Length: 282
Image (cartoon, rainbow, N blue to C red; front, side):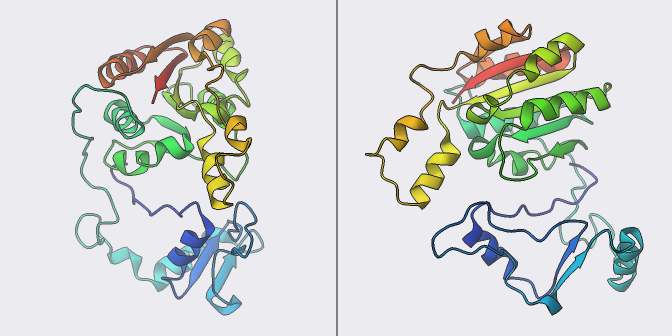
């Protein structure tokens, strides 16, 4: 958000990530493990950084990380960088929300723009939107400062319990969980905890009624839709009733199918304390 650098996100698929890292002569992994591919692909890359050890520096807990970063700061002359003046556009210096949208059927891109349009300053965004949220990162870069929490690896289902943890740790901040419907089914009981503890969490279900991330992986593996795999990744027969599910756990809930409906419901949830869930049909 405003006042912070807007770093480029690493692409999801390993071939794309390797191409991104290939642009650089030296890569530093600071207090982070060297990235590897999420899945093993036939004849696909495993290590994502195509550099030898001389050009890949891993600064972990065996070093004094703070001192290492200070040395890097000095070596690169970073003190001369002024946000908005000579930062090469890396820092976001001016608030810029997404433009107002016309009414119509709710889609993934419009959903993410609406969330970014109304999220409050100092919000905590728990982002497990997966394929539905590909444009949220860019849509939100001009928002007032906020915290953006992602998945930490390939496992899914982190969103609802992570939102619980964030709300308990920071009770004065609004938590917004942008949640893919398939992965949300791994941990819906977190909604009961939100209701029991009165946590200030808005859960936005990206309800495309399918495990779309798995469909993409199946396409990568050239598994055709004629196989039984399509049926196994489909969540529309029967559809999950997220409103009924959340209300069963004691969370106020609603469903939105249009831009106007979601806009109204989300603004109301932002302005009200306590747990809410909105099933966004996209």
